Structure formats: structure tokens, C-alpha cells
Length: 251
Image (cartoon, rainbow, N blue to C red; front, side, top):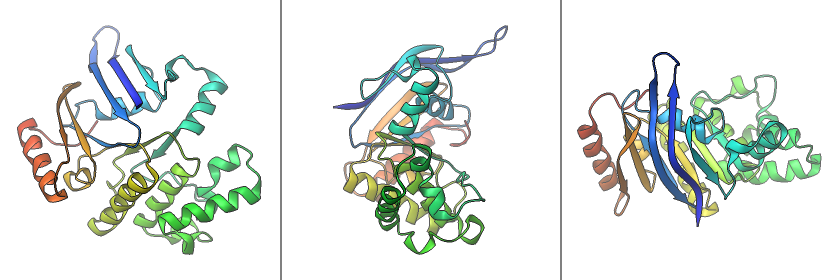
């Protein structure tokens, strides 16, 4: 069953001089898949993520998430769809300094007016999964980068979104914190069947995925699946990136 279906997706910028960021991209992601998106600087990775997250609108093409085309939704309908169906994890965490770690995690529930007793139940369930239960009363400036990112992941999945979208989630972390965060993404995917799409330039982070879609010049260049050990998959990723050329980061 497809959780996400992308059909002939294109995105152009500009009026007099047209820049085509994405060109006729089509792919699907099944329920419970963990998919990475990689490509050189300027390849269209972030543009794709912005379209999937409904932050931006495609020039042509369609997106279906659980059979719903969010492009056709407006106003409150779109806001509700984003809150219920999509979870977001960013490179810079996007936590609110005025709230405690626990308050940051339950923010999506607060916005949906979920009763406090239900919020607390969900909070401790998620905090246990992400191993942040000892941080809940701390402020954002009292925790490490890795702890902040685990908090951001907890906030993203507390509403059990259909699709989790992660944009360079290890970009601001040291290698140890990055490994812990990626092991948690892997655990959430395996044990809770969380469908996840992650844009990354880091082949180590990408090696935790089950499939990688490579984009070059706004089009799909290649696609590989993890079939053996993570080390073998890492080497496959390195091989494709070397063929792609250019810096494997950027937009």
C-alpha cells in the first residue's frame, strides 16, 4: 500500500527567466518505508521536501498522501491535514526557548486542544521511546544538540503522523549524537512502522535508510535498496555519490 505517491512533479521559479528546480519527478513510498533523498547542491532535494510538506506548491504534477491530494486543500483544512498527517524534523531543531522540553514535545497536542491528562500520557510514552524522560523539565538551553534533536523528533511523532519528513536531521550534530539520532529514527521505523523521508547529504546517516532516491538536476538519477549490512549499503551510497559528482549537500 502506498503511503505517498508523487506523479510528474515539477517546480519552476521565476517569470522572465525560468529556473526548473524539479522536472517530472515520479515515485511512490509504501507504508512503513524509511527512504533517504540525496543529491548534489542545487539538485532539488529541499524543493521536493517543501512540496511534500505543503510549504510550497508544485508548478505541475500531483502528490497523494494516504490518497489525499494536499495541494487541493486550503486554509483550515490544510492546517488540520498538516498537523494530523505530517511530522517535521529540521536541522536546527526549531524548539521554543520559552517552553520546557516537555512543553515543546506536547505542543502539537496543545494546539489541537487535547486534554492535559491525555497529553501527559502521550508525553511519557514518547519520552520513553526517545530516551528523554529525564529532560522534560529542563529548558532548551540546558540540553545538548543531540538531546534537542531527540526532543524535536518526539514532538514530530507525538501525533502519530502518517508521514515523517526530516531535513538534514544530523546536520548540526557531532558524530556520536548523529549516530544516536539515526538509531532512534531506525527504531521508530522498525518498531512503530513510521513512514519516513529524510533529506541528507551525510552517507553515514543515509545508510540507516532502507532505500535512497538520488536526485540530480531536478530529476531522479538513481535509486538503491539496502539488501545487506549497513556497511555494504554505506559503500553503495558512496559509489553512487562519486558518480553523481559535486557536493552532496545544499538545496
